[in-house]
Amino acid sequence: MSAALLEWSVFLAQAMLALAMGCAAWRTLRGPRAQDRVLGLDTLYVNAAMLLLVFGIRTGSVLYFEAALIIALLGFVATAALAKFLMRGEVIE
Image (tube, rainbow, N blue to C red):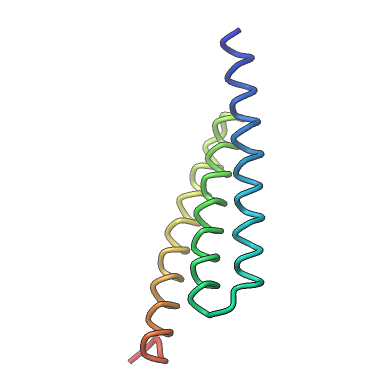
């Protein structure tokens, strides 16, 4: 019973994260302002990292955990650069 419950929970988590990624992609494409689009991209990379972590739990592979770490690091840098660009109009001073 425990293994079946875990398998079902992981599948449900993957489905919910896929739905959240769809909502974030919709906000990125349809956002009326640039700030909405940056927020959508930020949410999209967080959801992608979480989805990779759930894949790693399901398969037991360490590769997914490393990929999630790389996505999280690059997503943070991209969000900071986009925020700076929106505030000042330039990224590198």
